Image (cartoon, rainbow, N blue to C red; front, top):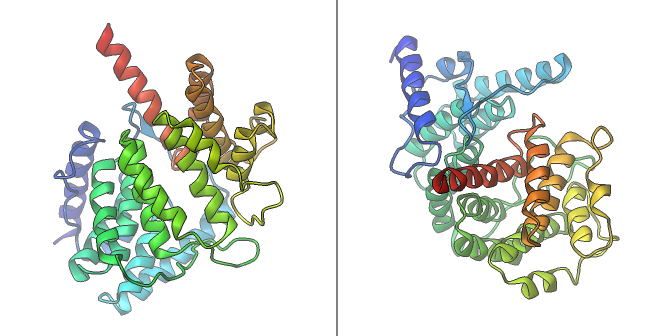
Length: 333
């Protein structure tokens, strides 16, 4: 396939996505060119929000971009040397995603599925990036397939693309599959299947970082289902002295739910890392929503959406809630 044909297919895929950001899983992205050079040369297909707006590239320093581009070139070269190797495919796709080239990454993982149809990791990573581009039905389909493939198999530590301060990978392949599956259901507003997947993710969690992240989303899901007593019971083992390396925002959210931190301490614009602000902001907004204060929840969700961290799960969740609210308002006009 020529490069011009690849770009034409990207244009077609973009048009389809704009009209069906949350469409049926049957509307799959087109199979990409198998040429890694064509993918790596592309500028990336733009992502549309659930509110029908294009999501602009996030600013990053020249130094950070240069580092990510260098890693991408290394991954592309490894793929060129071994295009059938599963790890080469996965890292090529992951490196594209770190540069917010999510649709290009989806294309690479699609190729990986064609070459390795029984490798759960391909579905796990493509499902994750379907979440990034707001294709939740496709994400559910991929992540459920991944869950089916790993059922009754040993779990494995998943290598980090951006190591934490201690250089300790904290997540696992199976854990990430269930985490993202639960999230995809949650973003669709399908809380019962989300609950089941969160419970499995919590069952296989192996450290405090993953436990607080899963517990937080599980708490929010139970609140959406009106199961408030079960949600409160989840908070019993949560204490400020848990050993947290990465997920301090989730711990702070849980301590807020317990009444041990005030809401304002989690929402300090300009004094909190933007990702932390988005993550903490969604949790606070969701808590107000569960308490029946829709106006306060909406105000906080709007503040989250005023940031530019649109790939963060808290941002996507706030966007989904705002989109549903607006759709409901239009339906009653």
